[in-house]
Length: 367
Image 1 (tube, rainbow, N blue to C red):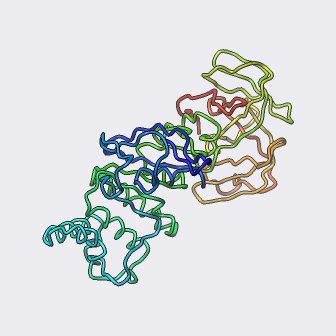
Image 2: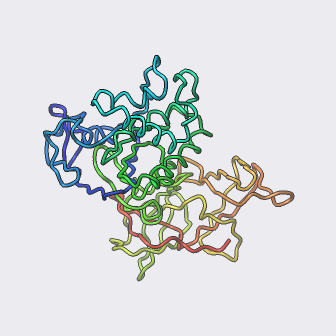
Image 3: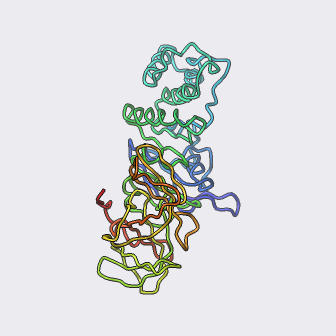
């Protein structure tokens, strides 16, 4: 499927199958085309190439109202002069559904969303989370084949977003209906999705389960986008290649690190990018290999975990290191010298084109 505005191509050859009953999340940075893709599925945007099928029926020329979809937008778009019952029932009334069926549908949807006690209130009397539930209820009563959600939580505060993530997961479990959800928040994607589509510049970078994308990123973009905090990257050069391993020398340093790979590692002398997730870095000593020496620039102590930001020659941003929360004499402090152990099995290597040379299982690391 393709989408263009004149000579400007927005979606480039999207080839994607979404399974019946699946919770699929489109994720990517602003401007990557995820909302355009969702609106194309809804019929709000006309595709300019390829086929789009819903339930086996090609719908390229089918109007939105006949596609069997219901869409929930970032904006709640509720009618302020109507109570919640009438807001949820409005579409059914326009479709001339019998009054008894409307009553049953609205009250069943309200029960699922835990807002049955609010049906006589106006939108102005509700919190943001309650208004979003009403917008979802308006979609539920239509009994669509596919739910489309366009960044539905972006207007909510942080605590309410966490609560609503649970509500969305429970809703999918209860309804067992296909759901497609757009977000720029990769934490939402990781916690909600059966599978995630990572988009960049109108192209699909990778499709997979949350853990697959976390453990097996196919390229530099996916590796840097999936995971919180994001993966650290260090420029390096290949200095030796063995079966299943490579040795790389960090740019601007004499330090050589060993990493596991399972792809062709090209040739000695090639430029590569080394990746390591903050949670896989360990506090090291001289009994370990793969050591970097740094000085802690800044510490964020969150109780259960501690983030240490450690500069290193040749990288623009300090290495982000995630450790278990520590107290007393062992607590990290700014200005403290620190040896960082980067286990070989925790390192990712990307070639000059950004392709991963390593797509192994999640590293099993000692605490």
